[in-house]
Length: 358
Ligand code: ADP
Image: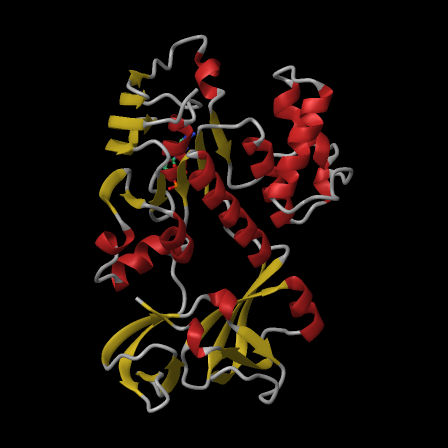
């Protein structure tokens, strides 16, 4: 099938009389990258499952390439073949990585030689060459999600649907997944619709963003159209962490110092005078045992107040001396090396160039 254009018209979905999608209408061009953002329970997964033809809308219509989807049709699996879905949690079976990825091609009856070639290419694309023989159930969360993506891409979908594919993954897997999505969108013209909570990801990858709340479309547009004067909205839709507002003053070195209420002074690489709102991505902050070992411009002493284990990554909250709290995300390996506990004293450090203006 050629590239896919998708349109929904007044889509509604009810579960036991409760509306979880309410008159959702939008259209996605062929080869476009659309991100869906919204608080938990907004209806993002339900919408993706309807577009994947797994779930039937209660009312309203889905049109694919100018044809109305008939959810009652027995042969809708033919249309589904051009659609790929990557769920939030990978669904892998107890077999090798190779067999997991090859599955979609085997059911289509391709030759062993062709399957081998395509599996090799798909694993290379997601940076997993060499892991063909490993049991898929022994992989880390990030590797498993990359297998899940390879499993979907190998069937050559023209519409790719993804449900928060990188939430709680390690930074390396996240960036490989992002690069792969950018590649398939750009080079293969695949139409991509992805639910995400990651603002940097959405800004970097998506051409347009659909904001969903309580099952309704709040807005649809480009990143700058939606998040122009953003603070509250961004925080509500993107689960943003480490947002501070303060007074920024440029320095002679061409940087700025932002005075945040409570006595926190943050140095940023941009040059702005006046009130600003800034964001420091949790993965750009490192934890140090002592003050001396970093060239980062921003170093603050604090105490660990919360530790959450997500498998290959650990999320921490660190309360610094000004009383403000930072969310920090580090790999499990560095966490274990530092033997940190709740109440441990630690320094956080981040570069001036990691401070983003929003
Ligand atoms: P999101 O992906 O934005 O977090 P979901 O689409 O998962 O939102 O859920 C939207 C709403 O629909 C939630 O209130 C959820 O509890 C409800 N919901 C989702 N699937 C079902 C289901 N199979 N049965 C009943 N309620 C459901």
